[in-house]
Amino acid sequence: MEALPGSGRAPRGRCWALPTALLCLYGFFASLRPSEPFLTRYLLGPDKNLTETQVFNEIYPVWTYSYLVLLFPVFLATDYLRYKPVILLQGLSLIVTWFMLLYAQGLLAIQFLEFFYGLVTATEIAYYSYIYSVVDLNLYQKVTSYCRSATLVGYTVGSVCGQVLVSVASWSLFSLNVISLTCVSVAFATAWFLPMPQKSFFFHHVVSSQVSREMKVIDCKNRTVIRDDPALKRVPGWEDIELKVPLNAEERSAETQEQKVDISRVLKELWQDFLQCYSSRPMLCWSVWWSLSTCGYFQVINYVQGLWEMVVPSQSFKIYNGGVEAVSTLLGAVAVFAVGYIKVSWATWGEVALALFSLLIAAAVYVMDTVRNIWVCYASYVIFRIVYMLLITIATFQIATNLSMERYALVFGVNTFIALALQTSLTLIVVDSSGLGLNIFTQFMIYASYFAAISLVFLVSGTYSFIKNCRRREEMSSRSTASPS
Image 1 (cartoon, rainbow, N blue to C red):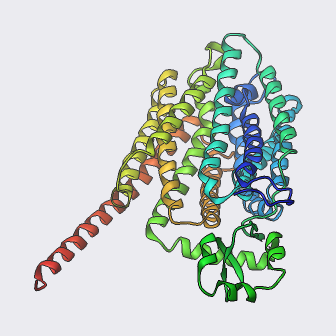
Image 2: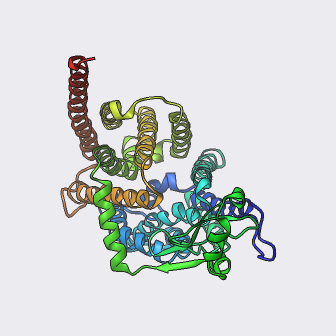
Image 3: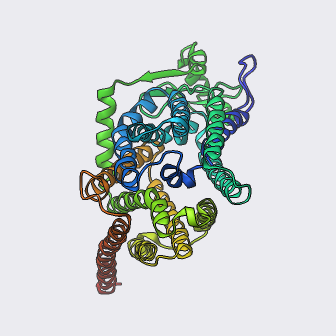
């Protein structure tokens, strides 16, 4: 559709390119952090000189707690502030995190650093939802793939660069953190150029209609424009309908009308949507797996560097953490791409598939923990990430299939919150020094058992559902056979 004469607006087809490009640029540089795969080594090394107990049992748990506490307020603030300010907050938090990583000293300072990193992860929702407020619905799938690919490529490039600089150029980990700080600073600068959205899902509903030189279909009852249809010029009675429309209808429809909703009403709508979304058994099934598995996934990736460090201390071995992260990310991306071509009746086999793949994840974590060989640990971690990325993509597809974007955002937020609540409980009991404060090997044995329990739950549920469906089909078949022809 062409732009309106004299409106000063670009054609709709061109409007999405600039914000998408800027957001992808932001996502790339925000994820380009070559020092991240070597974080544990850096904290345990001479730069920070922290002990293993301090890092694993007193510092890393702070991220989990802060992420949980910040998630819901940030979720509401993101929508209320219309995304861009929260993206800027994320960029600023990244800068603070890496600046403190360079210059902060002592246990309390690094714990404070972890709080800011919790803020970084809590504000990721702004990055992934911003673009939906500035592009048309038919572009959602395309821009989503661009934005997710940008972060994936940024993380992979950062991991590869970090590995090459450490293994080949023998750069110090401090230098890698300087590069990371530079990259996140570029991301923060890029975020300032993002256009400010005029709408959001919950607090700022926008009703806008573009006026063109074509005639439009008019809903006589509500007197609102529904769609363009030049053929209606030939419909009998069109002139009468046109006369009933107020003379200023075009001017009013050309303007963007914002409907602000108060917080109490938004919360009430969210609660009603929550009840309706989770009343569906398939939705509940996939959401339960999402929350349970994401909890375990967060725990493993948070502490896997510590496991590698215990298996082979980096002082006596050239570590390849960056290369492993890059390989697992790339192979996971391939698996995610391939899942779009898998033709499976997930309604029938979904729960059984979740059970079997969860068992494979449990086996990978168990091997990581019991076979004290660094290469076996690396290979098991790659398998772990590939399987998780594959399953979480399938779960996302299944959940999003019958949901509007607003309800998808709600379900995503609720599932993530539940995952974090479970992770917080697990961290408090297993990891935190105020709880059991278990060593890293015992922790990973518990994580392997955790995924095995998930597998058992879904195997039982899937078997029950399969038997129930078979009986239902038999009953329907017998009824159709018994009915007279």
